[in-house]
Image (tube, rainbow over all chains, first blue to last red; front, side, top):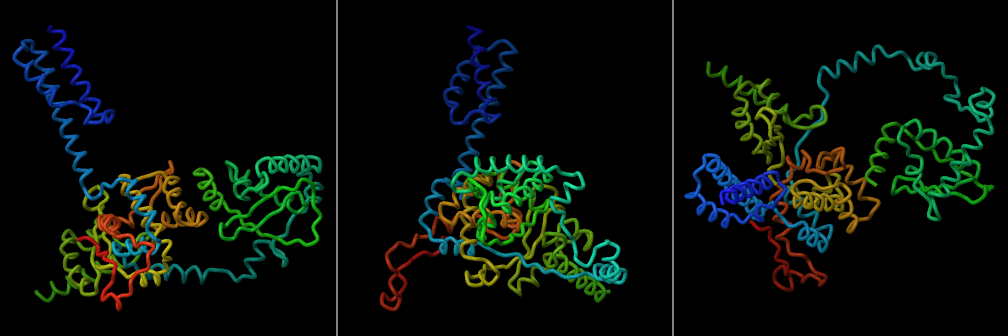
Length: 263
Length: 201
């Protein structure tokens, strides 16, 4: 009999503990029934340990009631809304109506941008110390023609790349493109994106050869800020060609990788 | 003596206005500790006086608490009232962008202040052109209306806490009558608008 009493107390304590750890819905605990049982039990408890457990169970049940109260307060507050209700509401509203709602609850911050005196002084110092453009160009060692490019032949001559190796890399990437693009094509950024920036640059470089040599085609998607890349089953000879400059910085790579991660 | 006190107060008011108006680093406004350093311990009293001054211009000082010490609270100057939709468009906002922000915020608030990016994106894509949704959400993150953590969870951003009356937003959203497909009666024929969609108080 005594064992049963202790088991009941421990069970109540355990349930309350589960609620405290957010493992159990506070409304799953039949608080009224347990309080009644504890009330009946109390006169029969003689052992100090049992009395202590009884006290613990009672404190636990009060915590459960507290949690139930919090839940009711949250649900009844204006800031609790059923996501489904919101979703239904926004579905039937026009963008203009939705915009009007935001505008009516909106109090934009007032902010000004201005140069401070220290910033102006710093700018003046920078300008005074800045060497003339001609001088800077000489320092950088740039010729009049600006930055040049290393053709494949030059890279081969320098021993950086062997033709066989390069062709193997191109073929591998072409096969990969055929597999991943299917008939619809694939996003250029998605295709060249790799876990490291260096690898992404390498893939972008190889893709530029795939397109130049007619192994793949590109379509501009200006509204989506992307390019569509699609493979050809065999290299195509083009009557007309155009250049598409693609700027690839580490920042842009990070931004695109962020999108890839979500997607 | 009194004149000196008045001059000092004026100087502090000017300093407080500068701190609140001008953008420091990436965010507008100033933190409590910055104001305390510039204005002294009684910076909140100075702000009360400034509040009276700026309210004449239709502005108000908004305090946004981040749950820490009072000195880490951020103070902003905001419009006291709200702009009209036409004015909002002259600020560079498209109607679609405003609508997207409404949907995103309403969803986040209904979900207890956070939701996965993909989930919010999915909801927006049901209503807005797909190609515009992700860049727009990213712009909202850059502007501070939303924030995103490493796990791709979206939260209500600092700018929303400063600028948007969240309770009013939800009340307006739920209280607004949806304009149906039927054409609206012209006021001059019916003697008044047939739409009765006042914002609930």
